[in-house]
Every structure is written in C-alpha cells, then in structure tokens.
Image (cartoon, rainbow, N blue to C red; front, side, top):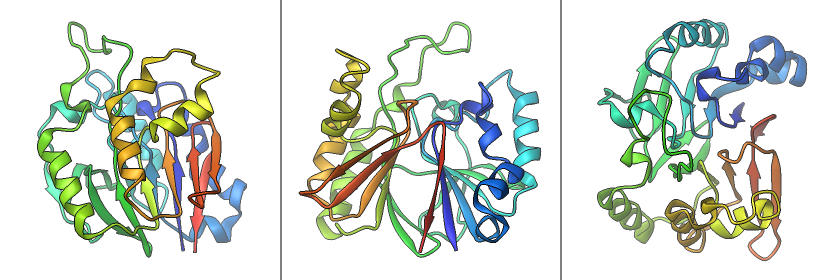
Length: 245
C-alpha cells in the first residue's frame, strides 16, 4: 500500500495533469505499484473550483475518476476554496476534510490537523505568501485566508503541546531555513523567504519529531537532507513521489 504525492496542480492550468493520469503512473511505477496506491496528496495549490474553469475541472474530474483512489489536497495559497464555505465530510482518515466533490472523491485537508492515511501519520500544514497580488478573477486579489488565522495557530500549538511525533509533514511551502538553502540562489531577495507561514514552519520544525516534510509551492523538484535532524525535505512539481511502507 502506498500514498502518491505531487506538487502544485493549479487546476491543470499548464498541463500538470499529464503526470497524474493512470496511464502515466502505471507506466512509471508498473501495474503492481500503481494498484497499491490508496490516496493521492497534492501539496497545495490544487486550484479546484476556479470561476470560469469549469470545463477544465470537468476534464480533470473525468481523468481522476479513472483512477481507483481519492485526491486529497493540502491548502496552498492560490485556492478559490479559501473564499468559499465548502461542506465538511468524514472520510475515515481522522479529522474531517473540506469536500470538493464526492465522485471522484476530491477534498482539501485542514491546516494544523493530523490525518492517518494508509498507516502513515501526517501533520498537515499549508498556506504560503502570494507574491503576485492579483488573481485570475477580475477585480479580486488573493484571499486573506492564505495565511493562518490566530485560531488556527492556537489550535496547532495546543495540538503540539500534547502530540509531537509524526511520520511526515504535508505542507505547501517549507520551513524558511530550508527554503533559503534550496532556493536562495534561484530567487535572490524573494519575499517568500520572509513569508510568515515559512516562519511558522520553522517553529513547528523545531518542535516535532518526524522523518521529513513534503512541500510544493516553489515549482521545482528539490531534496534537502538535514543530517543533524535526520530529516529529509522534499519539494515536488515536475515529478511525483510514491510513499511506501
């Protein structure tokens, strides 16, 4: 059994769906490993429910429906769902999720919550700074909810006060120190390095025990190994990762 991880999807804005089809995944991993996948986690910016993107969403839904496992997205920053009141559902992975669609099952994971997926214990983070101020909806900027609310932060630290061991963290952006190490040369002076969500991730990274973090956001495939913490930080975009037992 395994969990498929991928980077930003953006509602398939620039063809991100091409590496997520059943045909591609079966070719990449072989039929046996493909059939072992129990869930697909998008590491933020799922981009579902964009106004005006209904036709492209319908194509994505049809493609996902051909695969035998649900889609679970971390909340990114470019997420129309942040401005919506989506219904919540209990799908048997611990905490409730924000439901996008029942069939195929597509949902968003809540920030600051713990989920148990295929035997893995995940702490879910999410959110990040949008450095482009205007979104694709005319006359609207990005949603203020891309940053954590005070209530969400308080709930997270209350959780960590009593529970600090996880298998992995599912996030959108990574800890600030790791972002800078990996991308400082690519994006010198970027405001993403002073992102308050990345700073929150730094704090959380210092409080928990885990094997590693999985992130998206930076539109690059990178891995950083912290030998002192015995922890791996993996960022995905052009590739996918299969997390196996």
